[in-house]
Image (cartoon, rainbow, N blue to C red; front, side, top):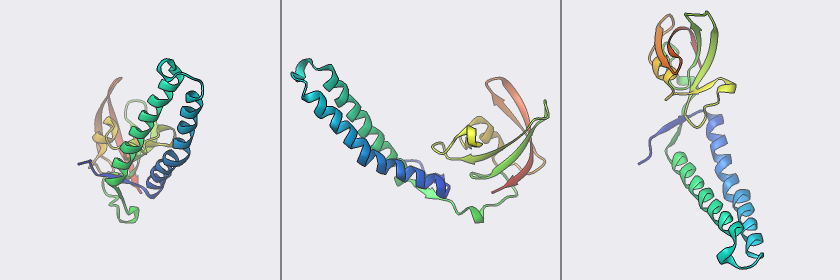
Length: 157
């Protein structure tokens, strides 16, 4: 059984769109590539055909994986989130105690994580160190560069 993953409305919509795209346009592109390679002659020595068939297998595996994720996906009602402590989908403003840098992250599911837009996975070391903390608490988080101390300045949704 797949692990339950919680999503924002936006994240769940993106996941559904990706599955739909892969099932329609994605499959069509691969079918066209296979047909084009098949038209080039002897299939026993046709590397292009083999590559297209392999791509098809990988494509179908990706669809199956995303459908499994989708089957265990749950939508979180963000209006009911408790902002007194850090939870999944919380938006957390942090201060690095060493250099004074401030940053804001939203804790999201692994598939929604996008550091450029300030979304980190709830399974990341930083998020794991923050979960359950309240404003004013300091988390000691182990990262590849060593250990950092992050103070929770604000929690919102």
